[in-house]
Length: 276
Image 1 (cartoon, rainbow, N blue to C red):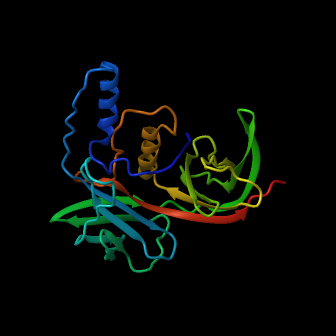
Image 2: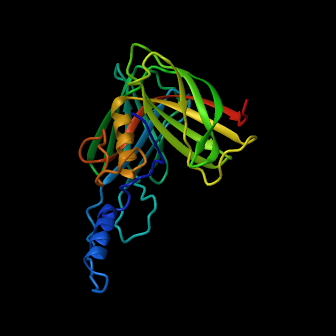
Image 3: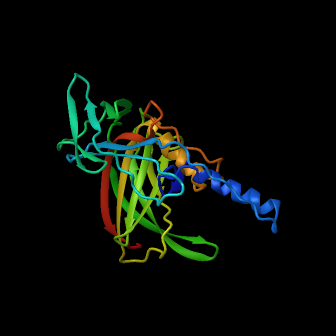
């Protein structure tokens, strides 16, 4: 199953998902009668966005709280949290706060096949999530082809890679085109297990790709729970098929925290758009 979508924090504004339903009901009920809707803000919830990859870098954890619907939508960072990553064998890595709500690790490279456990302590409460970094899959090359949509021809990128036969794999593709636009595409190997794969990467850009444009593609290998989290976002947005009823995607953190902890592999390539 595949989905193409732009990832957003759909739960950053409490009550937003209820607003559209209430407004729709109000419009259908009457075009003349004035109906006053009392939107009550829900209690703030903790949001944790955490990543560890197999790149040798400073890995980042972002911690915030949801904000009331009536307030400006902005990153509501939380200071003073304790962030500790645990590795098999008892080794622990402590993240340091570099700016409000942003915590970074010392420089290190995650190891594929390793299960990582992240503990985030905020206001005396511990939120825990685990993620197993899959074995690495290499992005071999990039290509392009023309497709016709409603009589108009567009250039779409192609990603070539070899899917391992003896494992279930899930992938997230992140694309950067024209040096500014970012698009994401999600896929898994239900029908391509063990095959040489040609993945078509659909992009929703304000201006279509043309020959000479620059393109960067990053392929991430995800564990299953993280894939399900991103897939739920795609369903809610309606970009992975018919939209579903609004709800927060299932987090791999406990104690009611929102967000996700992803231990993933990554493989990146840059190229210039050129048709053969």
